[in-house]
Amino acid sequence: MRIAHIAPLYESVPPKFYGGTERIICYLVDELVRMGHDITLFSSADSRTSARLAAVRDQALRLDPYPLKSATAAHYSMLDEVRRRSAEFDILHFHLSHFLHFPFFEHMPERTVTTPHGRLDYKDLRAAYRRWPRFPMISISHSQRRPLEEANWVGTIHHGMPLDLYRPLDRMSADAGYLAFLGRLSRDKRPDRAIEIARRTGMRLKIAAKIGDDDRAYFHEAVEPLIDGQQIEYLGEIGEAEKQAFLGNAAALILPIDWPEPFGLVAIEAMACGTPVIAWNNGALPEVVDQGVTGFIVSSVDAAVLAVAKLEELDRGRVRVVFERRFSVSRMTNDYMRVYERLIDMSHSPASQVAS
Image 1: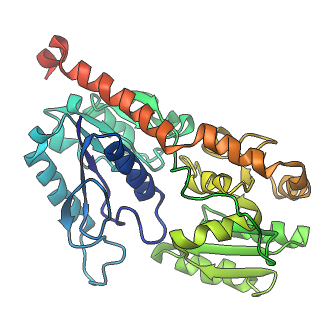
Image 2: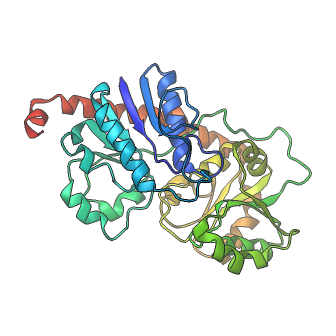
Image 3: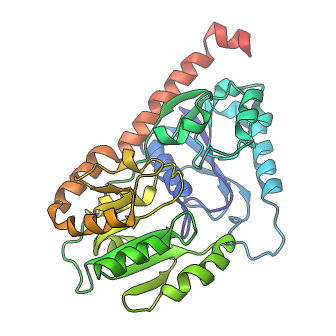
């Protein structure tokens, strides 16, 4: 099967630091290549992939030091290149969250599929879908699609990861047993809640997180004054190589989010290390965390404090087993393959050819 994957240009594939979307694209593309498919990845030139790389920008936008950049121009140039080469592929798989590609491919929606990786509750999205209703969509959780239930959903596919990417540690370090916060230091992610949980339980909290330009003022005003370097420690943004030790030595990953999380990749990264997750009852996390098995879903700081006290009841070996059963890259890729095959069959049907 000849498949084009079209990635956002904000981060490389995989990202050098933070970036859940680009990690999933990397895992999916590499697994499809391993299965013998002919895969082309449209991305920035600093991406690393086993697929054919169609480089459409010299480097990813976020780490490009040039002061003046246009994300819109970069993505439009990429989409024009994909459209020019579209006949080379059986299906075009878009991973763009804000649907810039719809006008470019409205003459051939049946040969595309889109996985939006972000939230879908923006005011203007419904109006856009009324204009372009034929584009097949795959949600990354059942929760993600609720604001746009009228869209042309053809499946829900939870994320997956290579089973050997992270593993439980053979031996924890002398520093083990802390609470971990991993992701972005933003209001939506609520690091202040994580700090309160640590203080009320008397446990240490290690924060490994990106500070985006939009979050810098929030960090300096609301979070930085709470970091004492002892009980509450900020490590900065960590890369792939540091994650296994960071997550594997943690007593639990804390996800005290205050937004409709579309999936929560960091949750299954922790599970891969055998580390349970304490997460708020928001977005997709109740779909991802098995209550009382791989962690606890809570709705308040009080409930999170009680959950910390129950962590010893959880079997870290079982956390890993559930991860292997539910969140492997092979399961995710096979799910996508079934959708690709169904869409290709439909695009070759007489009814589809008449409609197009």
